[in-house]
Image (cartoon, rainbow, N blue to C red; front, side, top):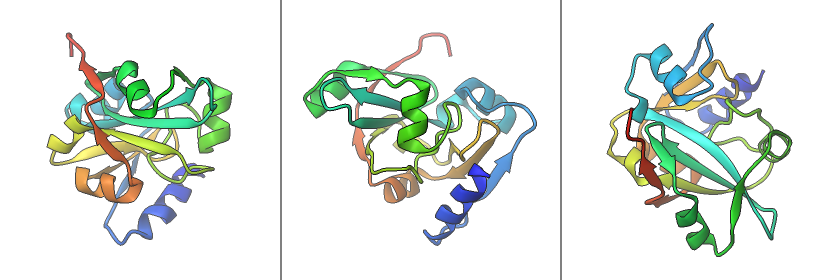
Length: 159
C-alpha cells in the first residue's frame, strides 16, 4: 500500500522511477545493499529526528555507510535533537521505521541531505515499506525533497 503511494508521488515528478520489492527486508542499509546488489554507500537512509524544544521533525537522508553527527544538525537548526521514536516517525511521516521514504510525508519536514550522497551516480531510497526501494540520482533526490545539502556524517570505520 505505502509503496503504491510513493509510486504515485514519484510519477508526478516526470522522472522514470522504478520501485523494487524484495521478499527479504531492506530495513537497514546493509540489508538493502545486499538485496539490491549495490554498495552500502549508495543507500539513502532516512532517519527522523525531533527537535527537543520545538518538537519539529527533522529528516536526515544519509549515505548508508555514514553515521549522522547529530551535533552538526543541531548547529544548523539551533537546537538539540533526539532520534524520533516509532510513534513520532509514524505520525509525522506516515511510514514505519525502516520504510521511511524521502518524500510523501504527512506533513512538511525540514530535510538535510548528506553531501556524500551527491558523489554517487545512482542511489537507492526506501519506498514506503521495509521491503521496497527505488533508485534515483542525487540531483533527483535534491529536486524531489528540496533538502539542504550538508556535511552531516561521520564515516563508519568497518563498512
